Image 1: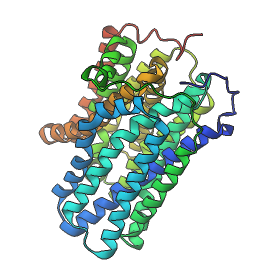
Image 2: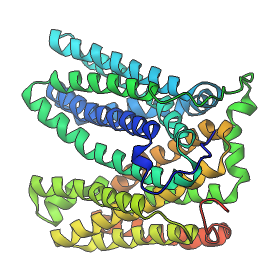
Image 3: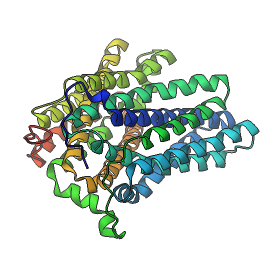
Image 4: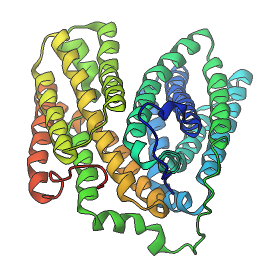
Length: 409
Protein backbone atom coordinates (compact mmCIF):
# COMPACT_ATOMS: atom_id res chain seq x y z
CA UNK A 1 0.00 0.00 0.00
CA UNK A 2 1.43 3.38 -0.99
CA UNK A 3 2.43 5.88 1.67
CA UNK A 4 -0.20 8.61 1.77
CA UNK A 5 1.58 11.35 3.77
CA UNK A 6 2.96 13.92 1.28
CA UNK A 7 6.72 14.35 1.13
CA UNK A 8 8.12 17.88 0.64
CA UNK A 9 10.14 18.51 -2.50
CA UNK A 10 13.80 17.86 -1.78
CA UNK A 11 13.09 15.60 1.21
CA UNK A 12 13.18 12.34 -0.74
CA UNK A 13 16.79 11.58 0.17
CA UNK A 14 16.04 12.20 3.83
CA UNK A 15 13.43 9.43 3.70
CA UNK A 16 15.26 6.45 5.24
CA UNK A 17 13.12 3.66 3.70
CA UNK A 18 13.85 5.09 0.24
CA UNK A 19 17.58 5.20 0.98
CA UNK A 20 17.53 1.57 2.10
CA UNK A 21 15.66 0.71 -1.09
CA UNK A 22 18.18 2.55 -3.28
CA UNK A 23 21.09 0.91 -1.48
CA UNK A 24 19.68 -2.55 -2.02
CA UNK A 25 18.91 -1.99 -5.70
CA UNK A 26 22.28 -0.38 -6.43
CA UNK A 27 24.33 -3.07 -4.73
CA UNK A 28 22.31 -5.91 -6.23
CA UNK A 29 22.47 -4.43 -9.71
CA UNK A 30 26.21 -3.75 -9.54
CA UNK A 31 26.82 -7.29 -8.30
CA UNK A 32 24.68 -8.88 -11.01
CA UNK A 33 26.07 -6.79 -13.86
CA UNK A 34 29.63 -7.28 -12.68
CA UNK A 35 29.12 -11.01 -12.34
CA UNK A 36 28.00 -11.19 -15.96
CA UNK A 37 31.24 -9.57 -17.12
CA UNK A 38 33.44 -11.72 -14.85
CA UNK A 39 31.67 -14.93 -15.88
CA UNK A 40 32.09 -13.99 -19.53
CA UNK A 41 35.82 -13.53 -19.07
CA UNK A 42 36.07 -16.77 -17.10
CA UNK A 43 34.20 -18.84 -19.69
CA UNK A 44 36.15 -17.37 -22.59
CA UNK A 45 39.44 -17.96 -20.76
CA UNK A 46 38.47 -21.61 -20.31
CA UNK A 47 36.90 -22.37 -23.69
CA UNK A 48 37.72 -19.60 -26.21
CA UNK A 49 34.18 -20.18 -27.53
CA UNK A 50 31.82 -17.37 -28.52
CA UNK A 51 29.01 -19.93 -28.59
CA UNK A 52 29.51 -20.63 -24.88
CA UNK A 53 29.29 -16.90 -24.20
CA UNK A 54 25.90 -16.93 -25.87
CA UNK A 55 24.81 -19.84 -23.67
CA UNK A 56 25.49 -17.71 -20.57
CA UNK A 57 22.83 -15.23 -21.69
CA UNK A 58 20.46 -18.07 -22.54
CA UNK A 59 20.86 -19.58 -19.05
CA UNK A 60 19.82 -16.26 -17.53
CA UNK A 61 17.07 -15.47 -20.03
CA UNK A 62 15.08 -18.71 -20.03
CA UNK A 63 14.28 -18.66 -16.28
CA UNK A 64 12.77 -15.19 -16.66
CA UNK A 65 10.37 -16.52 -19.28
CA UNK A 66 9.57 -19.66 -17.26
CA UNK A 67 9.04 -18.05 -13.85
CA UNK A 68 7.51 -14.67 -14.77
CA UNK A 69 3.89 -15.38 -13.87
CA UNK A 70 4.74 -17.40 -10.76
CA UNK A 71 7.13 -14.70 -9.56
CA UNK A 72 4.45 -12.04 -9.95
CA UNK A 73 1.97 -14.06 -7.90
CA UNK A 74 4.57 -14.62 -5.16
CA UNK A 75 5.34 -10.87 -5.03
CA UNK A 76 1.66 -10.18 -4.41
CA UNK A 77 1.16 -12.92 -1.83
CA UNK A 78 4.12 -12.41 0.55
CA UNK A 79 6.09 -9.67 2.28
CA UNK A 80 8.09 -8.11 -0.55
CA UNK A 81 10.94 -7.09 1.73
CA UNK A 82 11.45 -10.71 2.74
CA UNK A 83 11.26 -11.91 -0.85
CA UNK A 84 14.01 -9.43 -1.81
CA UNK A 85 16.02 -10.49 1.26
CA UNK A 86 15.79 -14.20 0.41
CA UNK A 87 16.55 -13.62 -3.27
CA UNK A 88 19.70 -11.65 -2.51
CA UNK A 89 20.83 -14.23 0.06
CA UNK A 90 20.46 -16.97 -2.55
CA UNK A 91 22.45 -14.88 -5.03
CA UNK A 92 25.16 -14.34 -2.41
CA UNK A 93 25.27 -18.09 -1.64
CA UNK A 94 25.48 -18.94 -5.34
CA UNK A 95 28.39 -16.60 -5.90
CA UNK A 96 30.09 -17.89 -2.76
CA UNK A 97 30.05 -21.36 -4.35
CA UNK A 98 31.42 -19.87 -7.59
CA UNK A 99 34.16 -18.11 -5.60
CA UNK A 100 35.16 -21.34 -3.87
CA UNK A 101 35.08 -23.19 -7.19
CA UNK A 102 37.44 -20.67 -8.78
CA UNK A 103 39.79 -20.74 -5.77
CA UNK A 104 39.90 -24.54 -5.61
CA UNK A 105 39.95 -25.04 -9.38
CA UNK A 106 36.93 -27.35 -9.73
CA UNK A 107 34.47 -24.92 -11.32
CA UNK A 108 33.76 -26.32 -14.79
CA UNK A 109 31.66 -25.05 -17.66
CA UNK A 110 28.47 -26.87 -16.68
CA UNK A 111 28.78 -25.68 -13.09
CA UNK A 112 29.05 -22.12 -14.39
CA UNK A 113 25.93 -22.58 -16.52
CA UNK A 114 24.08 -23.98 -13.52
CA UNK A 115 25.10 -20.99 -11.39
CA UNK A 116 23.92 -18.60 -14.11
CA UNK A 117 20.60 -20.45 -14.31
CA UNK A 118 20.17 -20.07 -10.55
CA UNK A 119 20.95 -16.34 -10.74
CA UNK A 120 18.56 -15.92 -13.67
CA UNK A 121 15.79 -17.73 -11.78
CA UNK A 122 16.27 -15.62 -8.68
CA UNK A 123 16.36 -12.41 -10.72
CA UNK A 124 13.00 -13.40 -12.20
CA UNK A 125 11.60 -13.11 -8.66
CA UNK A 126 13.71 -10.20 -7.40
CA UNK A 127 13.06 -7.69 -10.19
CA UNK A 128 9.25 -7.49 -10.07
CA UNK A 129 9.30 -7.75 -6.29
CA UNK A 130 11.63 -4.79 -5.85
CA UNK A 131 9.76 -2.75 -8.46
CA UNK A 132 6.51 -3.43 -6.59
CA UNK A 133 8.09 -2.48 -3.27
CA UNK A 134 8.83 1.15 -4.15
CA UNK A 135 5.24 2.54 -4.11
CA UNK A 136 4.81 1.18 -0.59
CA UNK A 137 7.74 3.13 0.86
CA UNK A 138 7.35 6.61 -0.67
CA UNK A 139 4.30 8.91 -0.75
CA UNK A 140 2.28 8.98 -3.95
CA UNK A 141 3.22 12.60 -4.64
CA UNK A 142 6.92 11.67 -4.61
CA UNK A 143 6.68 8.46 -6.67
CA UNK A 144 7.67 9.92 -10.10
CA UNK A 145 10.71 11.60 -8.50
CA UNK A 146 11.56 8.39 -6.68
CA UNK A 147 11.34 6.40 -9.91
CA UNK A 148 13.56 8.93 -11.74
CA UNK A 149 16.19 8.80 -9.00
CA UNK A 150 15.97 5.02 -8.82
CA UNK A 151 16.49 4.87 -12.59
CA UNK A 152 19.54 7.10 -12.22
CA UNK A 153 21.00 4.81 -9.57
CA UNK A 154 20.32 1.74 -11.70
CA UNK A 155 21.92 3.26 -14.81
CA UNK A 156 24.96 4.27 -12.76
CA UNK A 157 25.17 0.70 -11.49
CA UNK A 158 25.07 -0.55 -15.08
CA UNK A 159 28.17 1.57 -15.75
CA UNK A 160 30.10 0.89 -12.54
CA UNK A 161 29.32 -2.82 -12.15
CA UNK A 162 30.97 -4.07 -15.36
CA UNK A 163 33.84 -1.59 -15.08
CA UNK A 164 34.61 -2.62 -11.49
CA UNK A 165 34.38 -6.32 -12.38
CA UNK A 166 36.83 -5.86 -15.25
CA UNK A 167 39.34 -4.13 -12.98
CA UNK A 168 38.95 -6.73 -10.24
CA UNK A 169 39.29 -9.62 -12.69
CA UNK A 170 42.62 -8.14 -13.75
CA UNK A 171 43.81 -8.56 -10.16
CA UNK A 172 42.60 -12.15 -9.89
CA UNK A 173 39.64 -14.10 -11.38
CA UNK A 174 38.36 -14.83 -7.89
CA UNK A 175 38.16 -11.22 -6.68
CA UNK A 176 35.07 -10.01 -8.64
CA UNK A 177 33.04 -13.00 -7.43
CA UNK A 178 34.05 -12.46 -3.82
CA UNK A 179 33.17 -8.75 -4.04
CA UNK A 180 29.83 -9.54 -5.71
CA UNK A 181 29.05 -11.99 -2.90
CA UNK A 182 29.65 -9.25 -0.33
CA UNK A 183 27.51 -6.80 -2.35
CA UNK A 184 24.55 -9.19 -2.43
CA UNK A 185 24.88 -9.72 1.33
CA UNK A 186 24.88 -5.97 1.97
CA UNK A 187 21.93 -5.57 -0.41
CA UNK A 188 19.94 -8.15 1.53
CA UNK A 189 20.61 -6.35 4.82
CA UNK A 190 19.54 -3.07 3.24
CA UNK A 191 16.22 -4.35 1.93
CA UNK A 192 15.27 -6.09 5.17
CA UNK A 193 16.01 -2.82 7.03
CA UNK A 194 13.09 -1.15 5.23
CA UNK A 195 10.30 -0.74 7.81
CA UNK A 196 7.45 -3.22 7.59
CA UNK A 197 4.54 -1.62 5.68
CA UNK A 198 2.09 -2.85 8.31
CA UNK A 199 -0.14 -4.47 5.69
CA UNK A 200 -0.12 -8.25 5.42
CA UNK A 201 -0.89 -9.46 1.88
CA UNK A 202 -4.01 -11.54 1.64
CA UNK A 203 -3.13 -15.16 0.97
CA UNK A 204 -5.32 -16.63 -1.73
CA UNK A 205 -5.34 -20.10 -3.28
CA UNK A 206 -3.05 -20.42 -6.29
CA UNK A 207 -5.17 -20.72 -9.42
CA UNK A 208 -4.42 -20.12 -13.09
CA UNK A 209 -6.83 -17.19 -13.05
CA UNK A 210 -4.92 -15.47 -10.23
CA UNK A 211 -1.49 -16.29 -11.68
CA UNK A 212 -2.43 -14.74 -15.04
CA UNK A 213 -4.51 -11.93 -13.54
CA UNK A 214 -1.75 -9.41 -14.30
CA UNK A 215 -2.10 -9.99 -18.04
CA UNK A 216 -5.88 -9.57 -17.85
CA UNK A 217 -5.47 -6.38 -15.83
CA UNK A 218 -3.05 -4.86 -18.37
CA UNK A 219 -5.44 -5.67 -21.22
CA UNK A 220 -8.24 -3.89 -19.35
CA UNK A 221 -6.20 -0.66 -19.11
CA UNK A 222 -5.64 0.82 -22.60
CA UNK A 223 -3.23 3.48 -21.35
CA UNK A 224 -1.09 0.89 -19.56
CA UNK A 225 -1.18 -1.55 -22.49
CA UNK A 226 -0.28 1.22 -24.91
CA UNK A 227 2.57 2.43 -22.71
CA UNK A 228 4.13 -0.99 -22.17
CA UNK A 229 3.74 -2.11 -25.78
CA UNK A 230 5.13 1.18 -27.14
CA UNK A 231 8.28 0.79 -25.07
CA UNK A 232 8.47 -2.88 -26.07
CA UNK A 233 8.49 -2.14 -29.80
CA UNK A 234 10.79 0.87 -29.44
CA UNK A 235 13.44 -1.27 -27.73
CA UNK A 236 12.81 -4.16 -30.12
CA UNK A 237 13.32 -2.03 -33.23
CA UNK A 238 15.95 0.38 -31.93
CA UNK A 239 18.69 -2.18 -31.26
CA UNK A 240 21.61 -0.04 -32.39
CA UNK A 241 23.74 -0.92 -29.35
CA UNK A 242 24.05 -4.56 -30.48
CA UNK A 243 26.01 -3.39 -33.54
CA UNK A 244 28.36 -0.99 -31.75
CA UNK A 245 31.43 -3.23 -32.28
CA UNK A 246 30.78 -3.10 -36.04
CA UNK A 247 30.43 0.69 -35.97
CA UNK A 248 33.52 1.16 -33.81
CA UNK A 249 35.76 -0.96 -36.03
CA UNK A 250 34.45 -0.70 -39.58
CA UNK A 251 32.47 2.56 -39.82
CA UNK A 252 33.86 5.01 -37.28
CA UNK A 253 37.35 3.44 -37.15
CA UNK A 254 37.49 4.27 -33.46
CA UNK A 255 39.16 1.13 -32.08
CA UNK A 256 38.58 -0.47 -28.66
CA UNK A 257 38.71 2.86 -26.82
CA UNK A 258 36.05 4.23 -29.11
CA UNK A 259 33.91 1.15 -28.54
CA UNK A 260 34.12 1.72 -24.81
CA UNK A 261 33.03 5.34 -25.30
CA UNK A 262 30.14 4.28 -27.54
CA UNK A 263 28.94 1.65 -25.07
CA UNK A 264 29.07 4.10 -22.16
CA UNK A 265 27.34 7.01 -23.92
CA UNK A 266 23.71 5.77 -23.69
CA UNK A 267 24.11 5.13 -19.97
CA UNK A 268 25.62 8.60 -19.43
CA UNK A 269 22.69 10.17 -21.26
CA UNK A 270 20.29 8.08 -19.18
CA UNK A 271 21.88 9.11 -15.90
CA UNK A 272 21.85 12.79 -16.85
CA UNK A 273 18.17 12.68 -17.81
CA UNK A 274 17.28 10.69 -14.67
CA UNK A 275 18.92 13.32 -12.48
CA UNK A 276 17.08 16.06 -14.36
CA UNK A 277 13.71 14.33 -13.95
CA UNK A 278 14.46 13.72 -10.30
CA UNK A 279 14.94 17.44 -9.82
CA UNK A 280 12.24 18.59 -12.25
CA UNK A 281 9.61 15.85 -12.48
CA UNK A 282 7.05 15.76 -15.27
CA UNK A 283 3.81 17.41 -14.18
CA UNK A 284 1.77 17.75 -17.38
CA UNK A 285 1.37 16.35 -20.90
CA UNK A 286 2.77 13.03 -19.69
CA UNK A 287 1.39 10.98 -22.58
CA UNK A 288 2.56 13.34 -25.32
CA UNK A 289 5.96 13.65 -23.66
CA UNK A 290 6.44 9.89 -23.79
CA UNK A 291 5.39 9.71 -27.44
CA UNK A 292 7.76 12.54 -28.37
CA UNK A 293 10.58 10.90 -26.39
CA UNK A 294 10.18 7.63 -28.29
CA UNK A 295 10.02 9.54 -31.59
CA UNK A 296 13.28 11.34 -30.69
CA UNK A 297 14.74 7.92 -29.82
CA UNK A 298 13.91 6.77 -33.35
CA UNK A 299 15.27 9.92 -34.97
CA UNK A 300 18.54 9.71 -33.01
CA UNK A 301 18.83 6.07 -34.11
CA UNK A 302 18.56 7.10 -37.77
CA UNK A 303 21.19 9.85 -37.41
CA UNK A 304 23.51 7.43 -35.59
CA UNK A 305 23.02 4.89 -38.36
CA UNK A 306 24.33 7.20 -41.10
CA UNK A 307 26.97 9.02 -39.05
CA UNK A 308 30.64 8.52 -39.84
CA UNK A 309 31.83 11.02 -37.24
CA UNK A 310 32.61 9.73 -33.75
CA UNK A 311 31.53 12.99 -32.06
CA UNK A 312 28.13 12.98 -33.78
CA UNK A 313 27.70 9.28 -33.06
CA UNK A 314 28.43 9.75 -29.36
CA UNK A 315 26.03 12.70 -29.25
CA UNK A 316 23.26 10.59 -30.78
CA UNK A 317 23.87 7.78 -28.27
CA UNK A 318 23.63 10.32 -25.45
CA UNK A 319 20.27 11.41 -26.90
CA UNK A 320 19.23 7.76 -27.19
CA UNK A 321 19.90 7.15 -23.51
CA UNK A 322 18.21 10.38 -22.40
CA UNK A 323 15.06 9.88 -24.48
CA UNK A 324 14.78 6.25 -23.47
CA UNK A 325 14.92 7.30 -19.82
CA UNK A 326 11.95 9.64 -20.29
CA UNK A 327 10.01 6.72 -21.71
CA UNK A 328 11.10 4.44 -18.86
CA UNK A 329 10.13 6.94 -16.15
CA UNK A 330 6.73 7.66 -17.70
CA UNK A 331 6.01 3.96 -18.29
CA UNK A 332 7.09 2.90 -14.82
CA UNK A 333 5.22 5.73 -13.10
CA UNK A 334 1.99 5.02 -14.97
CA UNK A 335 2.25 1.28 -14.35
CA UNK A 336 2.84 1.79 -10.64
CA UNK A 337 0.13 4.39 -10.13
CA UNK A 338 -2.53 2.68 -12.25
CA UNK A 339 -2.02 -0.69 -10.56
CA UNK A 340 -3.55 -1.60 -7.17
CA UNK A 341 -0.95 -2.71 -4.64
CA UNK A 342 -2.39 -6.24 -4.53
CA UNK A 343 -1.73 -6.60 -8.27
CA UNK A 344 1.65 -4.84 -8.60
CA UNK A 345 3.79 -7.97 -8.44
CA UNK A 346 2.00 -9.67 -11.31
CA UNK A 347 1.87 -6.53 -13.44
CA UNK A 348 5.54 -5.67 -12.83
CA UNK A 349 6.55 -9.25 -13.63
CA UNK A 350 4.94 -8.97 -17.07
CA UNK A 351 6.44 -5.52 -17.57
CA UNK A 352 9.91 -6.88 -16.69
CA UNK A 353 9.42 -9.81 -19.07
CA UNK A 354 8.36 -7.54 -21.94
CA UNK A 355 11.31 -5.19 -21.55
CA UNK A 356 13.83 -7.98 -20.91
CA UNK A 357 12.57 -9.95 -23.89
CA UNK A 358 12.61 -6.92 -26.18
CA UNK A 359 16.25 -6.20 -25.29
CA UNK A 360 17.28 -9.75 -26.16
CA UNK A 361 15.13 -9.98 -29.30
CA UNK A 362 16.14 -6.47 -30.37
CA UNK A 363 19.80 -7.46 -30.39
CA UNK A 364 18.93 -10.63 -32.30
CA UNK A 365 16.83 -8.69 -34.82
CA UNK A 366 19.60 -6.15 -35.39
CA UNK A 367 22.19 -8.86 -35.93
CA UNK A 368 20.07 -10.84 -38.39
CA UNK A 369 18.98 -7.75 -40.33
CA UNK A 370 22.55 -6.43 -40.46
CA UNK A 371 23.73 -9.72 -41.94
CA UNK A 372 21.12 -9.34 -44.70
CA UNK A 373 21.20 -5.62 -45.58
CA UNK A 374 24.29 -4.28 -43.81
CA UNK A 375 24.62 -2.53 -40.42
CA UNK A 376 23.83 1.02 -41.56
CA UNK A 377 20.55 0.14 -43.25
CA UNK A 378 19.63 -2.25 -40.43
CA UNK A 379 19.99 0.45 -37.75
CA UNK A 380 18.30 3.09 -39.91
CA UNK A 381 15.32 0.80 -40.57
CA UNK A 382 15.04 0.24 -36.83
CA UNK A 383 14.82 3.99 -36.24
CA UNK A 384 12.27 4.43 -39.02
CA UNK A 385 10.24 1.55 -37.59
CA UNK A 386 10.29 3.17 -34.14
CA UNK A 387 8.87 6.43 -35.49
CA UNK A 388 6.25 4.48 -37.44
CA UNK A 389 5.20 2.68 -34.24
CA UNK A 390 4.76 6.03 -32.46
CA UNK A 391 2.47 7.27 -35.23
CA UNK A 392 0.51 4.00 -35.24
CA UNK A 393 0.16 3.95 -31.44
CA UNK A 394 -1.39 7.42 -31.42
CA UNK A 395 -4.18 5.89 -33.52
CA UNK A 396 -4.47 2.52 -31.77
CA UNK A 397 -4.37 4.04 -28.27
CA UNK A 398 -6.00 7.48 -28.57
CA UNK A 399 -6.15 7.80 -24.76
CA UNK A 400 -2.35 7.70 -24.50
CA UNK A 401 -1.52 11.20 -25.83
CA UNK A 402 -4.36 12.60 -23.72
CA UNK A 403 -2.79 11.58 -20.41
CA UNK A 404 -2.00 14.85 -18.64
CA UNK A 405 -0.68 13.76 -15.23
CA UNK A 406 0.62 10.61 -13.61
CA UNK A 407 -2.30 10.79 -11.20
CA UNK A 408 -5.40 12.95 -11.36
CA UNK A 409 -5.96 15.39 -8.49
